[in-house]
Image 1 (cartoon, helix red, strand yellow):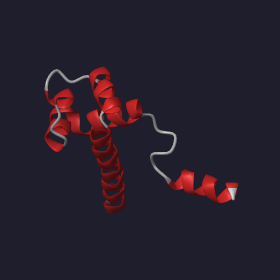
Image 2 (cartoon, one colour):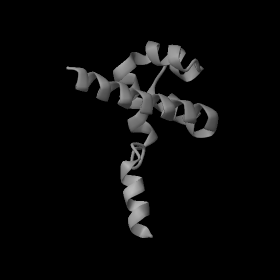
Image 3 (cartoon, helix red, strand yellow):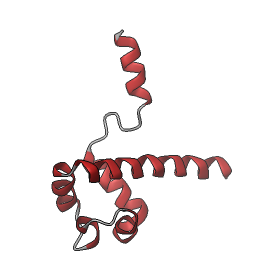
Length: 85
């Protein structure tokens, strides 16, 4: 049973990713302005920083879900663009 759990976790792109790494990757890829357009919350649109974003996202489950979803979308988008090159 542990083998199937381990293999399922290894296929999950969020497995082992900290929220800080996810927010940093999104900010690097889209920029804070682009991130704020995609997920319109104050921590991305008004004086954005990783620290303020983490504080908000840890207290707000719906916003964290949106960030994680956007991160997964970004990974898929990067893979698609790599295949087409």
